[in-house]
Length: 374
Image (cartoon, rainbow, N blue to C red):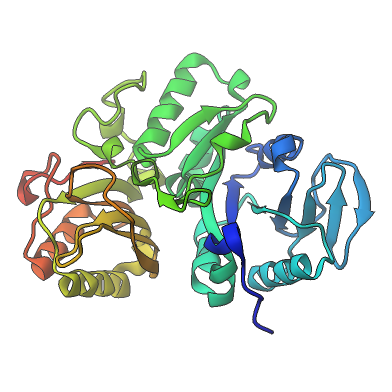
């Protein structure tokens, strides 16, 4: 396919993409309808990445080319039944040529059985797509009434929660207080850094679901603390502010799929040799890549005055980015992991072997205290 034309001005960081995922019946389309009714989302392109009819309630007012339609709200919508890469490329070219209304952001709604990782791979790996679009965040809908059973039975649902930047708790009116508290505890154990927001009838402020990525396109600066949320993993108090049974994390049913998924963070208190760090990442992803659901971090590399941000999904890593400045006086490296069937001890051992630096900062005495939650 022909190279895509360059972005200009404030678009140079890439058009932001929100990935909206969630298991079957969890309310994704209801949330999407609510978002598209908001005036602030009028210049949005929506990609429904599944087979079947477009399930939006908005009245159609015009037809665009191919499978694209224009909604009354001003948003552009299309259903993808094939290659998402081709759809994103074609959509951008049509935007440039004026074949479709100009849009400022993209929302991709996945099928309820979707693993989020391949779509994130698409946004990160294809050079033409990555040059024009950027992942702004993964938003996952969770059905408060049925999620416990869903998480027990379907690993896809567990991955959708574990990889989220924001979790929307739907159908809260159908769950009693005790069941909701237990579910929120489980969600927090799976993904400590993701904020959980209750949603009624799909009504949610778009501002709570955008700007979740590393870069703010308006200021071109990094909001590392918000993006990383490493403090959510720190020590035994990682769940303060959540009103639930604090023994919950230690009494999972061993048959639950989320016992296979672990979220943790470690810190390193001195600069890391860049070559050793890159070698460690290469070996880790080569041998255990499928088990690394998500990695993100801010790293102090020897010889670099400024911090370096890393972001990876399984075997694939986004090119490392040197940030303008450290977010605080703290110069320690912080790396967050969400893994499946990969114990944190393996990561700590290999990291120490390659870098001669043991991770610190939590409650595992074998490695100077590796901060974790499970």
